[in-house]
Structures are given as C-alpha cells and as structure tokens.
Image 1: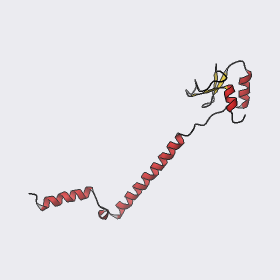
Image 2 (image 1 turned 120 degrees about the vertical axis):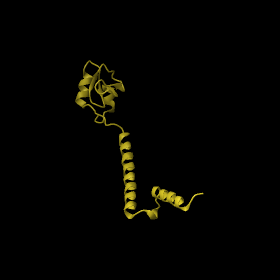
Image 3 (image 1 turned 135 degrees about the vertical axis):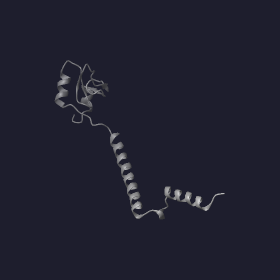
Image 4 (image 1 turned 90 degrees about the vertical axis):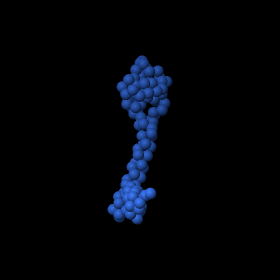
Length: 120
C-alpha cells in the first residue's frame, strides 16, 4: 500500500513538469507570451519568404539593338532570359533550350524574344 508521502512526492514531480496557469509567475507568463508571439512572427515571415521564392523569376531581356543585330546576322542566335547570355545555333522559334552559362532552360530564339519583348 502506498503512503501519503509517496503520493505527494509524485504529485509534486508532476506539478513541476506540468505547471498550471495559477502556479506560474508573472515573468513566466510574459516569457511564454513572448515565445508565442515570436513563433507567430517567424511563421508569418517564413510564409512570406516562400511566397516570394515561388514567384516568377525576373527575366533579363536583351536590348532591341542586340535583337536587331542578331536577326540581321546569318547565325542562329538566341538569348537566355535568366542570365542574359547569347547562345548560338538556336533556331528562331526555339523555346526553353538549356543555357551553357547558367544551366537554366531559358534560352529563346531571337524571333521569339522579339515577339514577347516588353519594349517591342
């Protein structure tokens, strides 16, 4: 049979591990509220970063002079819309070829770039 002293010791251990709101000091309550606020702020910041990361990447458009020079040349020239590099042996209607400079699938043929260029 269990004596009252053992039961009270177990209850004290449980109370230390699981404090009730009445058992907490004001400083502990304030610290818990600050932790909760910090967690909410971190969650909101992380969500905003994920949203920004998933937004479309900024495109690097060649100038219209570069496009005209590429179209007037006898070579098939394309442009990477991620890093801005020129690519050669690219058909005029090519889309999403791999860029040798940055490795992204963003090389477009010069005529395609001209058709979708924001300044054209």
